[in-house]
Image (cartoon, rainbow, N blue to C red; front, side, top):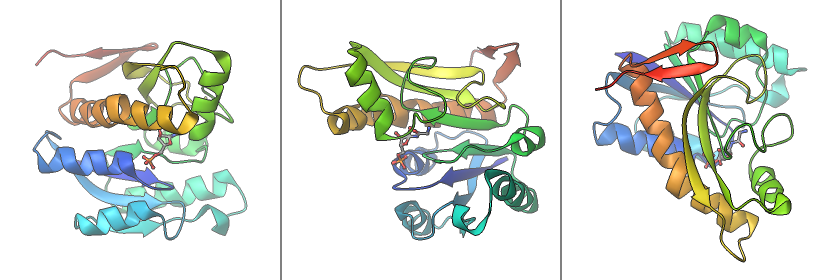
Length: 209
Ligand code: GAR
C-alpha cells in the first residue's frame, strides 16, 4: 500500500475528491495517510478531520523562505513514511530538495492545459482570468509530475473543458474543477499507486489494466 500525503493551502475540494474516491475504493493500492496544510485554519484540514485522516500544519509564515519550508516538509514526509506526495491546491513553489527526495513521486494538479497558462504567477483564479483574457475556446486541467521547473514536469493526464459565452473566472474555475480536476486527480493517484506509470524523458507511459 502506498502511503499518500496531500499538501493543501485552502479549501481542499481536490482533497475531497481524493477522499471520496478512496471511500468508493477507487484509489487502488493507495491510502491517504496525511494532509499537510501550509495555512493554519485551512478548510481542507476540516475535510481531513471529518474523514479521520491526520492533519498537520507546516505554515509558510513560520519560515523565511520556500527552501526552509521545503526542508521542513521533507522531514515530515519522511517521518510519516510517505511514498506519494500530492499537491492539491498547494500554493507555494517547492524547491529542489523536495524533487530530490521524491523523484517522479510528486503529483500536482494545475487548472489549465499545460503548457498554456502555467508557471510562476499562474495559480488559482489567476489561471482562469488569463485564459478568458486570451480568448481561448478550450481550457482544462493537467496532472503532472513535479520537477524543478514550476508546472514543467512530465504530464500524466489532461482533460479539456470548453469555454462558454459569458463565462466569469469563478464560473470557469468551478466547471474546470467539476469536469476535469476532480476526475483526473484521483485517477492519476490510483495509476501511480498501482504502479502503472513510468516516465521516459518528458513522456509518461500508462500501463493498460
Ligand atoms: C484548484 O483549481 C487547483 O488546480 C489550483 O487551485 C485550486 C485549489 O482548489 N491549483 C493551482 O493553481 C496550483 N498552481 P482546492 O483547494 O479546492 O482543491
